[in-house]
Image (cartoon, rainbow, N blue to C red; front, side, top):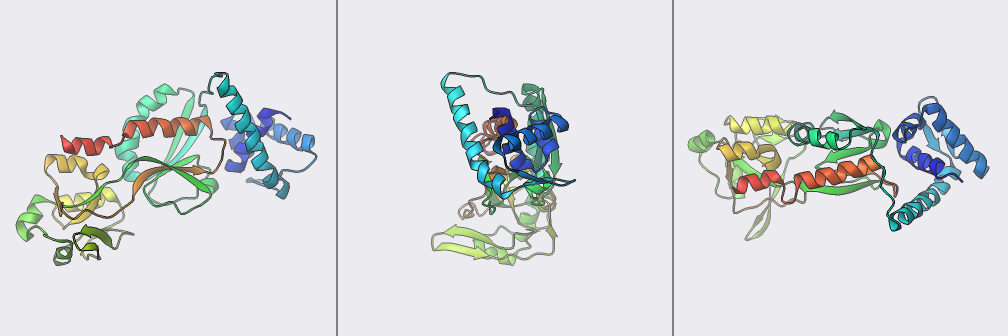
Length: 301
């Protein structure tokens, strides 16, 4: 049984596309299809259903997958035990990333990342929508939302520290809130999908459902609306650290921290065989952002 055939089959189980899986391993579509045929011939069973658009695993393919992954994991462990070199990432890495975070914190880091891996092409989709990684053919996604799909794996890249803030002109005109409940006496700029916030107080957790005359579906737009005096808002420090640093925004309710387990996550389909390009991306950006993240360090200076 050919190890390269197994590698292709495992990648195929994630991409559901023979051409894409083959491209990741440096194979032409014809050679990739031939490898799958040879693996099926060697086993004497059909492993995949083929259509004109994509493929899916047969019942036998689903049963065979964990054994193929185990064989490859054992081979990788054996290589590591004798110091065998790692495979350099090649092919195309398809990434889904939230629009604001991608513009502010992914794009500036790509120059050194791509210089380190010159054989790798990065194809990004900048969108705040939660997309289906497998259906969309993505290798990895950056998210700051809770992981709900059990078929995915998440690795923390950086903290997502959220605070309440306002502009100096708004505070001068309407005053500074002194408690979470006081938010209800102010205009609040809501980010779509976030209708309530939980605060830690001496009396325990307090939940506030603020209201306001303006709502936005983009973190940068909500931040800018706040900086222009439209009201209070909750913002992530990764989104607003520059405005907080230069005084365009001021943190309020410092003694009442928000209760949140949000973080910046790298999310990818479940597989014990992680493609070198995905591993390289995760390791690089986890180190690049740091813990604490560089945007929080900037606020401490």
